[in-house]
Amino acid sequence: MRRFICSLAFVAALLFVPAGRLEAQSSGPVEMSPGYLAGFYTNTATNRNGAVYQQGRGYLFVNENGDRAVLTFTGTNRLGVAWSPRWDPRTVATVGRDGGRLAIRFDVPGMNPVFWVAGSRD
Image (cartoon, rainbow, N blue to C red):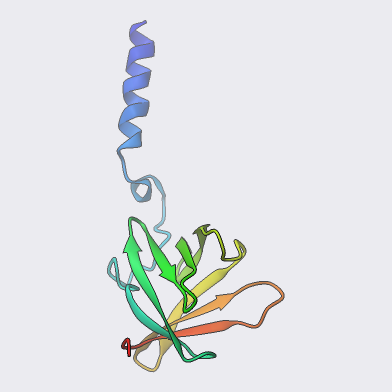
């Protein structure tokens, strides 16, 4: 009985440890601070605005149509869809720079890439 209770206590303690501390390597970009993606972006194809909000360990993306998706880091400078009722779950977002501005490239198999560039909301 004592072993069972100790095991439960150990497992419960692990639930409160951030997942990043359990991984051998960080899955997010090391050179950037948390929340660095948050802000307004312009879709270069439609010239319409989207937004990115930090949400826990991920980011809430809202495109120019109001469709929402939560993306989380799956590798250095790469994000994948963790939740969305409308976005294709195969979407991969790659973070880079366009000159000095943040830029995000969205790739979905079978579709042309979409580019968002950080900018002001007009």
